Structures are given as structure tokens and as C-alpha cells.
Image (cartoon, rainbow, N blue to C red; front, side, top):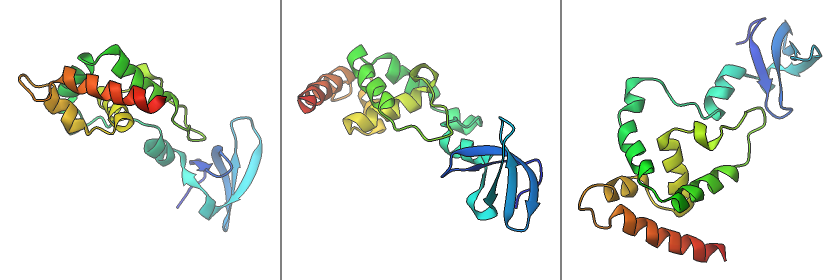
Length: 155
């Protein structure tokens, strides 16, 4: 499963390091600070897989970016108060140990839209549909109604 030289993580202990020895079910890893610790093989995951799952990285294939312009157009047309709702939601996310959280500015338009969608309980599709010319409700109407409800819920 693992080999000497692999970088692994024990999620529960929030310890990561490079495997220096494997002895049966015991894996010895050297941390970045030089300390050596050991864990049971079953308690470890590859660091690359952990970061891919929890790091919030955006896939780099063409299909993953097919609608980037649409998402960005929605974000570009949101009121600052609506963007603040997403920023607040982002700031309130409980960090995953071992993962450096991204700043709001580093998020993709879809990630921002997902945060706003979750915070307002409004599907991303509704945001996209409302941003189209002649939509009912319009993006402005949708935002005003959601901001009103959001403000009432905060009191």
C-alpha cells in the first residue's frame, strides 16, 4: 500500500511526514521538524490524496471549466452585500486540520457561488437562471429578497 519515501498523514493526530521505514503493520514517518513517529499502517492516508479531497483544489480538465464564464458573470453581477454573505459563510467554515484554508480571493467563481448558495439556501441553478436577460425573478429581485430574509434571520 505504502512505500518508503511516500508522504503520509495520520488525520486524527494531524501528523504528516515521509515514510522512513515499514515494519509489518507499523510505519515510521519523519516529520518536517525531523521528529520520527510511528503509526499503524491502517491509520495512515497518502498526503496527496488527503489534500486532493480536503484542500479545495479545482480540477484542471477542460470539462471542469466549461461554465466558468457563466459562474463569473453571476458573481460579477452580485451586490456587495450578497458577496459579503458568501465571505461570511467562508470565514465560518471549520478548518480541516492539516489543510491551509483558501482566502476568499483564491476561490473560483463556482466555489464562491456555492458558498452563497449554501448560505442563502438557494440552488446555484436559480442564480444562473436569474442572471439571464428577462428572467423572472431577475437577479436583482432575487438578491433583494434573499438579503431581506438573510438580515431577518440574523436578528
